[in-house]
Image (cartoon, rainbow, N blue to C red):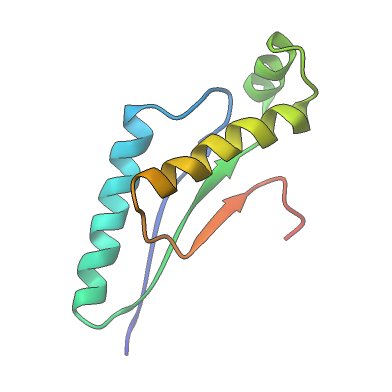
Length: 98
């Protein structure tokens, strides 16, 4: 069995998900499902980028510390994967130790 890797961009968490995030995620999921139909062992990852000045500024605007803010917004992206019934193998948060 051949391996196949597909990923979305890691989405910035300076705001909640929007249509563009959904579109990109669905496109990656479609490729993942297609490859699985042909017997590939697929690893499909998505996730959030929780670093940067825009993220820090967005947290300050909401009167939250950065980790509280990224926890809330990243959860919205995780919920998006559930709502869209995505088949991702992994969800990566850049603030994780791994």
